[in-house]
Image 1: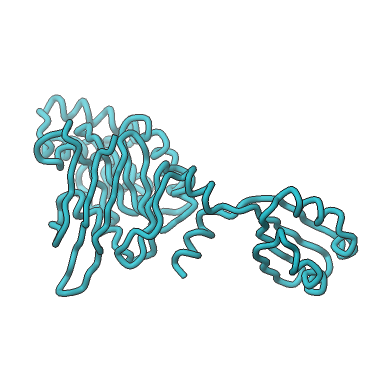
Image 2: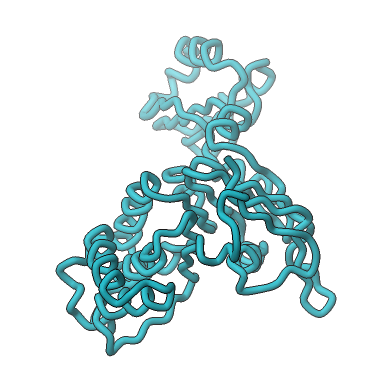
Length: 300
């Protein structure tokens, strides 16, 4: 079922339209990615969904099974979370739990459970000022989960992390999908492709592409060949430009990327091409275009 739906959601700042009448349907029980370059309106959209910012126009409806103020069903981690460095990790999550209305005893119990979940059980007594970037992000996720929300909203959760911290948080998000619904924003396409089920792509405040990951892959991904030879292939490429199965070609001296229409026909002809063989093949790889290719095409 749909956990949150928006109709014509719009936000204006002094006459500038940051979000332009978007319609979102966030399904329960899955991970949804909100993609777009910096300035696309992602953070503004999330701030409206969380209640931190009121929309100029449009509506936000939470599912009728969860009545009352929707904020009690939401957990939130902003792009640049602030922590009290003098607190321990456990104290901070207990503090967040009590703010959410849990009793002192329940808050401590839930805080310990969440720190265990995010891999910070041993660091619970360590001062937050001594946490790494990845540890702080995991701590932020723990506080977002402590009151058992139906949806956690994460704004660019891995953008400021080093490769190790980024991997830790992505693996944690995969685990969290089994416990709650997730909505996160990012401009890193690979991350969205790795953990999300539904995808919305924003450009200049508007939703320009949407659908399930599987649907987008089936609709937009195309068979691709990555070919590398010892010799330059410009002359050889001239001989295949009129092939019916060829859709797009990109070449850089002795490297070429060929996007094709019919995988089997293209593979058969390429492997039997004597001119290509004379260039001394180093690499012949079959793949598919990625979501990043779709993203770049949409942004242009």
